[in-house]
Every structure is written in structure tokens, then in C-alpha cells.
Image 1: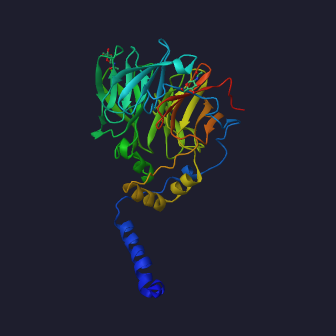
Image 2: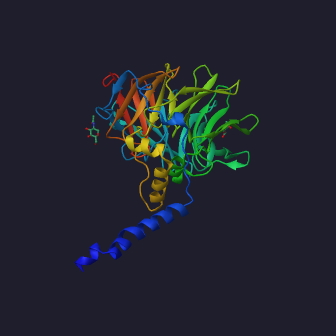
Amino acid sequence: MALFFFSPRFLFFSTIIPFLVSIALYRLDTFDPAPLPADALVYSTNSTPPLLNDQLLTGAEFIGVALLNSPEDIAYHRDSGLIYTGCVDGWVKRVKVLDSANDSVVEDWVNTGGRPLGIAFGLHGEVIVADAYKGLLNISNDGKKTELLTDEAEGVRFKITDAVAVGDNGVMYFTDGSYKYNLHQFAFDILEGKPHGRLLSFDPTTRTTRVLLRDLYFANGVSMSPDQTHFVFCETPVRRCSKYYINEERVELFIQDLPGYPDNIRYDGDGHYWIAMPSAATTLWKVSMQYPFVRKLTGMAAKYGFEPMFMENAGVLQVDLYGKPIALYHDHKISHITSGVKIGKYLYCGTLLHSHIIRLDLLKYPAR
Ligand SMILES: *[C@@H]1O[C@H](CO)[C@@H](O)[C@H](O)[C@H]1NC(C)=O
Ligand SMILES: *[C@@H]1O[C@H](CO)[C@@H](O)[C@H](O)[C@H]1NC(C)=O
């Protein structure tokens, strides 16, 4: 028996056969990741801000504990002082936040029956929701009526309606992360490394949906500029945000080579955008983004239940109107921060993983 382990037969069964089977499986698998553009694989310190708080969780308070199931985006309604957020169970919830975080009040407002991600306010007080599964929704301000505005463009249905901003002209600017994969499968879109995302607009006066840009890499967050000439949008796997000039229909780079993978972006009314990053660009990410075959193996393993995303060290980057980094708030102990918005002295963070909103007092715990 002992001899068997050293025999050619053992070698054949233990090594060569599994090796050949793996190669066959790899070859047969149709999942076919592509190389990413070269500028998406540059890692410099250009986007490293002068100010840093690398312990975002220290001193942070939790809002709506156990009442908010994965609150992805956060929208602040100035008139009522309420925070609107979309949860994984379909609820758009309203949160009355108080100085004492534990006393905050959460209201189940409207259930879309889908997965509300991006939230913005229309010109007449209505709530516009980018629902990953349903499309772009209009919820009347009394919460009584939910109407589908659009769920396709140029004959192609949205698969991950992701984020939305409303211009002073009433037009909605929004993203479809992917026309190929739905939210449940979004990891495959990232791993595949092909541009299935679109930037779109919906004009409520003509009720037309337009494709502004196609071939985007997982088109994600959108935020209007304060002067309304353009808006900024994020592309997650290529770690960049761009400006779209509305009248000129022109794109310009806003910030690239981000320290992480951007999700939602929010203007704070005070000269700064806040870009949430659910994960930093860790070594594991860098390697898999560099090599399509690593992403292919990861994707194959994911089909057998392996968790394909190595999310780590989430944070929020504060940048000025020119895309110049100002401050980064992050923490190695947290992942999946999907939105960050500054309201008064607080930074509020939405998340895809936790059952609360995270709040940090920026005066008490500033970046230095
Ligand atoms: C808020 O609630 C948490 C969890 O129940 C508790 O640990 C914390 O001390 C409370 N904070 C205040 C200020 O009451
Ligand atoms: C949203 O619906 C409300 C009524 O339910 C309507 O008054 C409003 O104009 C709609 N907004 C858009 C952008 O379609």
C-alpha cells in the first residue's frame, strides 16, 4: 500500500487527472473576462488626499439599528429634515435623525417590491427611485402612488437601475449598471471587465428615455453639479468619475485612480462631493483586475458558491468641485459602504451589508 503513493499510478490519479480535468473545465467555461483599459490599472498616490481619518468607526454612531436592512443610498430632504434610504427588502424608509442617534425614528414608507438603490427628489416633492429590478420609479410625495417612469432604452431593458439625480430642469439623469447581469449577479459583471453600463436621461415633459453614454464600466453613482451645467458619474471597476456636460453633451474626466471602487457620489451643497467606496483597491483586487484569468477562475469558483468579492477597507472620499481630493474617511474594519453624504456636521454612510446607517461627527472626529 505504502508503495502506491510513490507509484506512477498514484501520480497519475492524484495529479495529472485533476490537472487535465481543471484545464478542460477552464476551457469549456464560457465566462470570458476581458482585460481592463490600461489607465484603470494605474495605482499612484495622485488621488490620496492630504487629510485622513483611517478609523471611521471610532466614534461613529449607528442609526436605525436592525430597522434598516442594507440601506444603500441616502437622500436628505431639506424641507422635512428626513433621510430617505432604500433597503434590500424593497422598503424605502424615512428616518428622522436626532442628535441622540439611538432616538432616531425609522418609518417604513413605501415598498417598491424591488430593490430601491438610488434616491433623489423631483421638482414637485415626489421621490424618484432607481430600483435595481424595476427601473426608474416616481413615488408621489404622499407615498400613495408609485409609477414606473422607464425601464428600457433603445429596446434594451435595464438590468441594474442604479443611481439617479434630478436637474433643476426636471430631467432625471440616471445609470444602468449593466444590461447583461442583474443585481444578484453583479459580481460577474465586475469580474468580466466589460462595459455593459449606460448613462441615461428621462425627460418627464416628453416622457422619453435617452442613452447619453454607452459602454461604461458598471455605471454607478450620479450627482448634479451646483451650477447645473453638468453632473458627475462613477464607473466602479475602473475607479474613476467623469463629468457629463448637459448642453454640450460632452464628457470630461473628473477624478481617476481612486483609492477604491466608487459607488454613490453626493454633492453636499457646500463645495464638496462625497464618493463612497465599498472596498479599497487591495492587493487581491489589483491582481484580479490585472489578470483576466484570475477573474475567470474567481467567476468559476463563484458558480460553486465561493464569495467572489473581496471587499475590504471601505470609505468615503471628499473631493472639491474640481475633483481634487480633500479628505478620506475609511476603516479596515468595515466593507460595503455604498454612500456618504454630509448633512450639517455629520457624515452619514449607507451600506450594503449592515442593518443601520453609520454616522460620524466630523467636528469631533475630523480627518487630519
Ligand atoms: C445606543 O445604543 C447602543 C446599543 O443599544 C448602546 O451601546 C449605546 O450605549 C447607546 N448610546 C447612547 C448614547 O445611549
Ligand atoms: C410623479 O407623480 C406625481 C403624481 O403621483 C406627479 O404629480 C408628478 O408630476 C410625477 N413626476 C414625474 C417626474 O413624473
